[in-house]
Image (cartoon, rainbow, N blue to C red):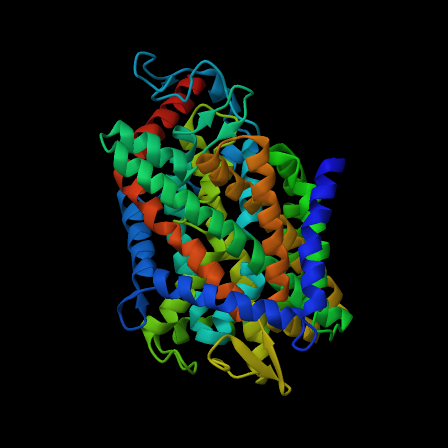
Length: 533
């Protein structure tokens, strides 16, 4: 522990030197100017458009989710109750039943059972869900929703909900595959995610080279995603609310807040998935319930406006009036982009956390995973949207804002979590304190979960040694500081690019392997039926 703390301390030395060199522009602005070209480059490459205003990656994500929804017969609705029962432990006795052909082995694992001889894994269904939800339920739900409404108006909410419902099917597929093709280390440590179902699954189908290349590409993008959306974007919004609450005007305030956050996150992520799971299973439900109660308080306190808000969400989805959107396609893309960033369905990241579950039936965890987009987008994002829309019935700001995500309230520019904070402040005394705590908790829980995702990808590329582990964590903590210091536009452009880049290699695996998911689902249902007889 002393060695790790010394390493973290050593990480701050270059930044302290850097701080002494920049006095004219300030630390935060200097860091932002250095990071912006990187952000702009990746954003331009990943979000290339097939026609004006329509990035190919968004179209791929939506059409794929629609395909899986239809192919599996609307699993997002049909299996919702069963998914809740799996989390509750209703089918835990099923793990004692053995179904599969032991002669059909792949790389030492029984092909249809994930090593049928034992229930391997490191965490429970609930812990895996909590860890994965903590990676998705973050400031995308607070700042991301505000950004969507600021850009696309109330109609963006409608398309966020649609994307969330469709994303449930994609999550089901990728998380089933994550467990199905996971690796189990000699010490029982689980290694899973798209890197493994791409390399092992495509090899199984005779596409070994393609699978290996896709797995490497995914791992690289996932590391980038852990630095961006799972890290820098979170520390960025935590810094926004902290600076506002504490009235910090210093040009280097973001940098120093980033230092504090980096130390806090660094202490937590040392413990690995078991430490992360033990933290998230307590923090995530608490913060989610607290945040939802605050939203419900505002919504029910303005209940007469709820039907008007819902009506506006629907009408504006098909007839948008927000400045800078101007079309159904425009507002649809804004909604889909923010929803996909928030719930990460299609990116494959959550399957890394779900792979660590204690089970021998891969489809059981796929069912658990489909709850994520519902919790994240359909429930929490919608609650946030209703609060902001109700707040704006008084004409607090103009939808569309400055066209980059910021709006003017009483002549002051607000963006992201700042908009949500203003909405809360109107209805709840001292809500700025509450929302600051919520944003910081969301940020920290997301960062510690994403540190696990990125580390798994890092180990896939560079091995599972201690040196590789420490190197990744130091780089990760560096991006906590960059995110806190740089501007929201630069950080979120980079974060969007890194999250959505993961979609390309991940979809290769999903489209090659979705028949495996169907087979595993039938096998799990057969086991449930057998356990009852």
